[in-house]
Image 1 (cartoon, rainbow over the protein chains, first blue to last red):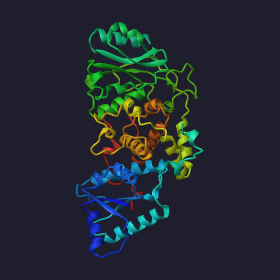
Image 2: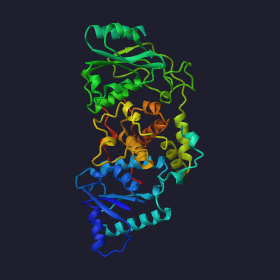
Image 3: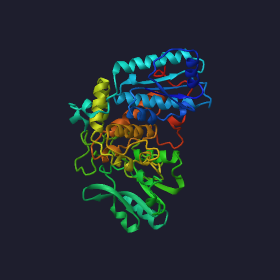
Image 4: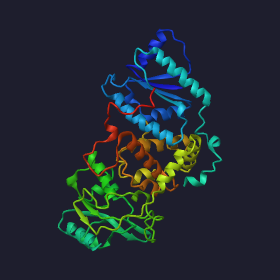
Length: 143
Length: 290
């Protein structure tokens, strides 16, 4: 699993989780970005394309953005992205959005454990595997 | 029709514009035409087959059009929304173009159609049209025809899709996208794909693979939809030109619905309206965020 996190809140929160010696699922690889506003939905698609089974996006709580409004812009962008993926039938549990502040090491642990558990229940992401999706009765309707 | 031709003739002969972009009667139905001399103005037509959104020729990436000189463009009320978006994003200047609005009573799905306009043949976008009398135009021509028949098959289809379990929706879209040959016709025809260099053409880094692999198609289709969120004027040209018949207009329609529900935004022909994804409210919904 890949986590895209902002430098100022969630990364520091994850760091706190580490220095507090909290034990959590080891499946998540963190990519640190300056702000959630820097996270393009393409990052998420690329991660899934290259074999990630789930993605976490996390940043500062509303009002706490280091750049004042980056997370507000991100929130709108991801609201649209989230609804679009839902319409396309993407398995919602593979995608986790959260706000984790620098002091919420415990919350980060919970988010990670929960996200990993939900993705584990779904199994590997095979949505791009034509054989896994093939045999559709809907093929004719797609026109 | 004569009113339109006369106006075009006047604009061309008094030098107000160097080219009039409109529709003509071609061998396979109505098609776009560029008229550069007053004599050519007789070619211009407007009827229910004039489906094409000619605002696409105003996009600044079409430098070959700009080279023809100042343009007058014939627009339906819905096409004016795309022009408004180009103005809003400072892609064109209002004084650089002349807009000839045509009063419209709906268009066909197919520009080659010879059928009368009925619920079966009318384009989905015409449902609930509130711009039969075009705004934003410098000149408005024609009589106001009857309102188009209301029949938006897309709305029904979206409801049907939304009621399905997610796995079936995924299967539906994967099956539809599997036919995509990555020809980029949807991008080429779009009046609002204004990027000089599209992200699919960028190679360092290569965000979207150019192949027709399912992951690459998904990346392209999602990016296309996302880049048009809050910008799309729902002219449906992408779906009309798609050689694989992918229902891109259904995707656009759903995006419009999402923006309406989330941010109370609807496509408008007001060039001053704020862009929904360029703005925010501190109390925007965040039920999907933990």
